[in-house]
Image 1 (tube, rainbow, N blue to C red):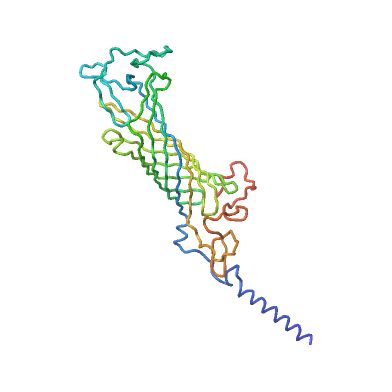
Image 2: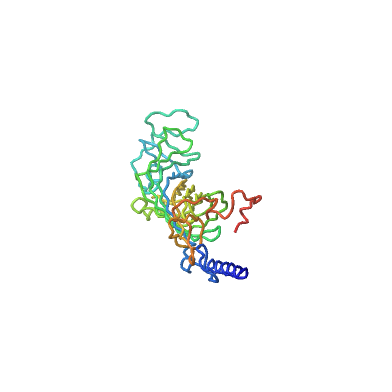
Length: 349
C-alpha cells in the first residue's frame, strides 16, 4: 500500500513538471529559438522624427566704418560719390533692396560731434568719422522638422526649418536719439533652412536626457524681399543644447535653446558689398517619436512597462505615448543614484 501511494505521488509531481513546461504564459516554449524582431523593425528602430515650434529674436549687425552717413528727415542714408565725386548721392534701404537718390543737399548738414550733448531739432547730420556700427533686431517664429538616425549616444540626421521673420529695426550703436535709425521696407518674410545635423547625449538624469547638437547647411530668403541679383546668402550654422523629457522609451518632449549664425552680402549701387550678420537666439518646444522595435502588448490589463514575452512573441510594455516610470520602465538603463565618478557619462555605451 505504501509503495502504491509513493508511486501515485511521484507520478503527480512528474505531471506537474511537464504541464509547467508546456504552459508558460510569461516566456517562450521550451527549446524555442530566441525571439527577435524582423530586420525591417530592427533598422527602423534606430530612426526618430521630431517636430517643434518656438520663438526667436534675430540680431542684425553691420559695420559701416568705411562709409559716410547722412541723417535727415527721419531717414538714414549711406553717402556715395556722384559723377563730380561730391558726397551728394544717397543710398537707402541697403539691407535688401538698395536704391539711389541724388536729391540730397548736404551743404547745410551739421557735422556730427560725439562730444555734443544736444541736437538741433529738425537738423540734418553728416557722420564721417568714428565707429559706425548698425545694430538692431526683429522677431522670428521658427518651425522645424527633423529625421534622426540614433546609435547608442549619438545621432545623425537632416532637417528643415521654416521661419517667419518681422521688420528689421537697426540703430547706430552709441549714437543719440536725434540720429535717425534704419527700418526695413518689409513687414515680414519667410526664411527656409535646410541642413544636416549631428548630436550626442552627454547626460541622463531620472527621465531627462541632455544633448548637444549642431546644424550645418544653407538658408534661403524670399526672392521678392531679398532679390538674388543683389543679395547672396552664406552658410548656415546652428548650435543647440536640447533637453528631452522621456515620457516613454519612444516618446519624448523636446526643449531646445539654440543660436543661429548666418549672414548675407548685399551689393550696393556703388559696386561695394555690405555684409549683414543675422544672428538668431531661439527657444523651441516639440516632440520626438521613435519607431518602436516591438509591437504593443495586446493584453489590455497587462501592466508590464518593459519589453516582455507572452508565450512565443515579444511585445513592448506600453503604448508609445503612455508615460512610463523610469524607476521600473525602459527610459534609462542607468539609475540616478549610480556612482559614476567625475565625467563618468563619457564612458557610457
